Every structure is written in C-alpha cells, then in structure tokens.
Image 1 (cartoon, rainbow, N blue to C red):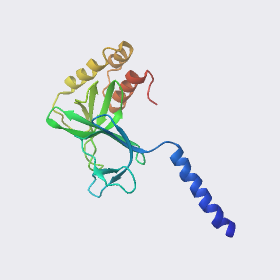
Image 2 (cartoon, rainbow, N blue to C red):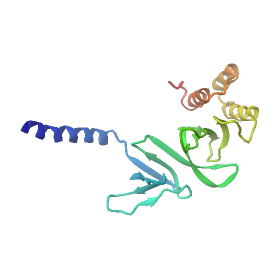
Image 3 (cartoon, one colour):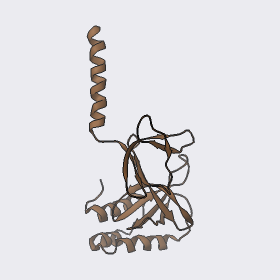
Image 4 (cartoon, rainbow, N blue to C red):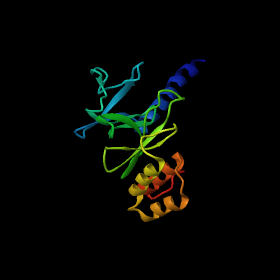
Length: 185
C-alpha cells in the first residue's frame, strides 16, 4: 500500500511533465507583433484574460490590443479581424490559417448559427458561408468571392470549378489545399 502512495505522485508528475514537454502553452500576440507566453483564463461571462506570471495582474484580451491568441487546453486560436459592417475589430476562431484564411464566429450555444468568413493576405474578412438561412450577399456572390481568392492557384481553382460544391467541408478542403498543397484529412 505504501508503494502505491509513492508511485501515484510520480506517475502524475510524469504525465504533467509530458503535457508541458509537448509545447502546448497559451499565448497572445499583441498588435505590435510581440508574442507573449501566458496563462489564459475564461470568466463565467465568457471573457478571456491573460496573466504573464502567477503573481502578475490579469489583463483583458481585447481585439484592439491583441491580434491573436491561443488557448492550449481548448486547442483554439482566435484572431482579431474586421468585418464589412463593423469598424471595430472582433475576435473570430481560426479555421484555416495561411495565404487564404478561414474564420468562424463563436456560437453562443449549440443551436446558434455558424458563420464562416474568408480573407486573403488581410485582416479584413468577407462573409462566406452560414448554417443559417441568410447572409448579406447572395450564394453566387459568395461563391465568386471564394473563386477569386483561389484563382491564382490553377490546380485548386480548377478543382473548385469542376466539383462545383460549396459545403463547409469542401470550402475548408480547398483553402487547406491552397495554403499547404495537401488535401485535408
């Protein structure tokens, strides 16, 4: 029985060290481009704060001061972007990051609408796809926006035109292929 009490803390410590060794840590990137390793917490109201060290003061994560942040325990990265109808930046979850990036809004609950946005080489996004009934632009206009962003990569653009699909999965696969040259699993 004594050996169990001795071995259990050793095993737990080894597991914790393994998680730390994987390099999965929270971080924020400021608008100046500084990457800061920190601990990010989420309040009951859903607002994130970051703390640089255990004794330091928590700071709110605001889209006008923080360009991007990553929460390791949730494996979620969010980026500060601008939408057409809002002059102030807002955070969106990064779905695909590269020369062409996909973002989605954070749903309030499992019944709320998922909206995807797209940007190419910019932090100004265009609405692209929704699980709801309406977006401000017609489906054809949104398909044209995606096509224009893929046009300079002929194999990807040709695949888009040939398959003529506009599902969440197809959009993500095409953007991933554009950015990496590989199909998404």
